[in-house]
Image (cartoon, rainbow, N blue to C red; front, side, top):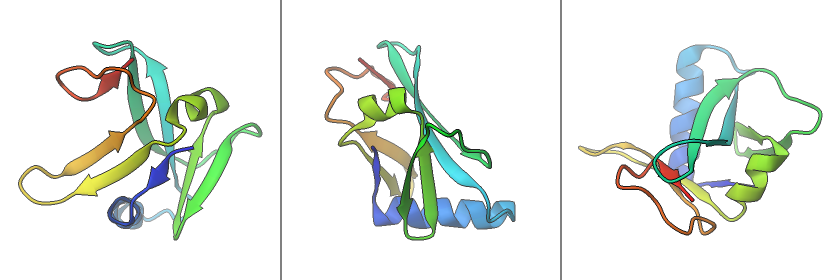
Length: 105
């Protein structure tokens, strides 16, 4: 399952707080597509399937489906602020990534 850095967990918490719904969870998934074969998908979700894998990082709950969890094993979600702010996933399972940085194989 993916791990959240402290900075990522703090930013996700801030975004959930801004939504005003404390029941929201961060869903991280891997979907077919993108330049390199797979792409990451992240969104807030209020529903959890029975087979979802759930991990808690402080006040943030992260859920992922079992297929995505296999591809995210050992991966880390980080957040960087500043001029080039945003979320980035470091995934040791990725054999190659595309130039845009949002897909992998």
